[in-house]
Length: 386
Image (cartoon, rainbow, N blue to C red):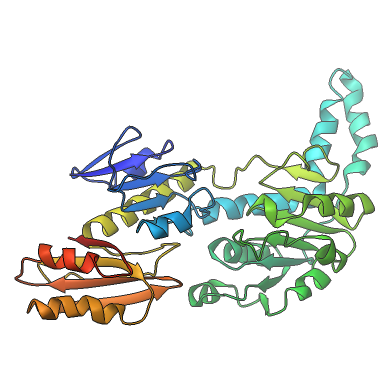
């Protein structure tokens, strides 16, 4: 039996992916795997039994990635599973930023009690909430991952000219991106040319405060900024100053902070991007499948801290080794098998940054002693035999 600990309320249909070999719940102890949504795990003490954590969503800021890597815990996310849900809300935000719908609705509520005069008052006051159409305008999409590509394609279908920027554009994203999108190599072209800018990049040291006084100064007058990724991608103080000066006409964010709440021109949405039943089901199902494939087969797909490694089973036993990405490591591992006269049926080794992962399929041998020897190699973090 395998044990899966849940840190949040996880979609029932997602958990149904696990078969009867698994025990699942928030009270599980000595878990083999874990599924989390938004719960903060930075202060969590992980048991030695924990092999993997799957985040039912894309962002992993709530998980201590470095500590997990050091302990040989694979961290998965579920890229694309909630992409359509976020895309739909971004398009809504795009329209809300233009047409002043939110402030118009709030004003309309103040007419309650005016009786038959409401109609005339509406006609008299509606001019204060006029805004431009998005058709024919230029949209800059910063980050062309699963969500960014969907947003770009939807905006293109709505008649916008789309500029897309992503220095790490994947082949898959490139294939999915509408051919009418203008793929640019200099982010400053977006700042200089676009009427609307939407951000779809992860929060890292290099992307923090991506939208700041300097980048806003390069933008067109009256630009509209959309942030459905992470709050810290936008410098709040600089953004507020740009709103006050008129440089920015509207700021729509799904990650409101105390600094921007109540500020004129800010549309603050309470992190609803992935809050759809379909999205929660998709993310939970993908997370469950990732955990099962790793726990039962050693395959790694959609990890944020280890390389993607998948290999068909071809032996009676599979040895999975998480280790430092240092010279001669593979020679040291295979040398253990050679020294014990054990034939390796199949082998796959890949690295990612400071860490690497090696899978070896073995036939007809008792490899428990071999696994112990591999674990003693300097630089080996974790060894599993499946």
